[in-house]
Length: 392
Ligand SMILES: *Cc1c(COP(=O)(O)O)cnc(C)c1O
Image 1 (tube, rainbow, N blue to C red):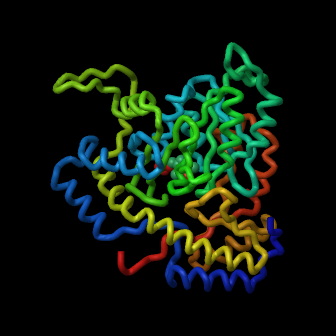
Image 2 (image 1 turned 90 degrees about the horizontal axis):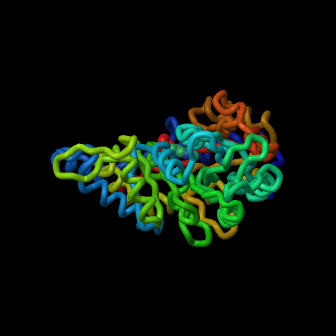
Image 3 (image 1 turned 45 degrees about the horizontal axis):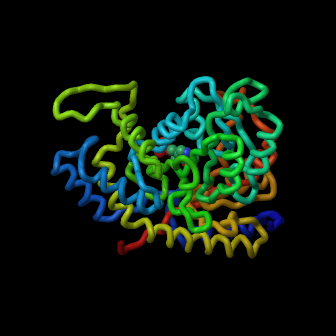
């Protein structure tokens, strides 16, 4: 790992020039969607068809296209990524009074979805290179905090069953999923991968999210492709997929005219209007991935020359470079950089406030979270959109 020597004033100035060279001279956001006429055409066709809501051709086509892209048998489209994770966790067996192992380095939705199921997050440390759940920390937690009881894994501190483990591929950098899978399998805990940030990220040539029970995606406006708002569950398990579809569509039994709902379920289905937008975006996904890699390479060269760590993909993985990140020397240097760039209309952001520090999650069990705190003090996200292209 390259040690950061510190960011001089000159480097910050050079960085601002570089960003303007890539993105132009106005306000530069962290991430913005790119649309062409295709989006407008697709959406207006759906409006003309009247099928704007939870039924329509586009949703099922979009589900098939995304499932095929990630290499899963089934895709179930939802209103957003949080809803996808909520249902995935519920089906994986997260219910009231159970605990779920996850990382404190994540967007708040990861922990919220656990809470919606009545579960309680337990925050395990991340690795400094992957930015995601650390298999070493995970194993250490299992070895010192759980016992086996009637085939279940129980936290000895609380007596609660550990119902799932949710690793998240931070900013599109894949976690060490093989090790995590192996450990969770050993302790009989299902893995649900939060792939909201990792569409187009691979481990050993396989898409993120296909190693465990299922993966979930987000198509929010700032994600790699967008449906406005949207999400998806993907899985190879037919039964799981059918139950996910049922639970996201108010558990209505199919019938030509009767209304019969056989469970307390959710109105979580992605509207067809959004799926139309998604199909147009999906057709650009390969291109977006290439462009994002090109930007990341430019940044990587720039920061390497200045001995500042730019977060690159780990060996054996392909990152989608959704959000590019650099690791600065300390919190002081981080704050100075944030101040100087944002005041110049170049949007940069620190890491999310670690989830265990938020009021709703303050009383959750954690390990020492050394790397979590270390990263939170140093990591900065820099502009990462696909540069605007005249011809699309
Ligand atoms: C974006 C995101 C989600 C889900 O987001 P929605 O806005 O509900 O689509 C979940 N987890 C992570 C890590 C995310 O970045």
